[in-house]
Length: 103
Image (cartoon, rainbow, N blue to C red; front, top):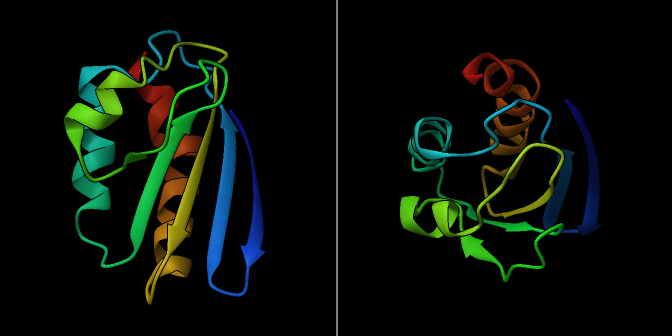
């Protein structure tokens, strides 16, 4: 699992990650991801850059599932708000440590 983090403005963090687990971001890992995102007040959006998708709300299970993220797809996540630093750290941890366990 690889990810890059950058600040795209003074008020927004952006993460980019290549999904390396066999099942991608399907039902179970998507549900865990969305549940974790729901506890933050920041606006969190995600898109599948490999699939050319539009941005969706990362707190919406239907939105995340419509991205159809598969193994080796690249996703991009933006976080903007008061707790963006904490949210970005949790997302990075999920992508690096938890998602690979979902094979």
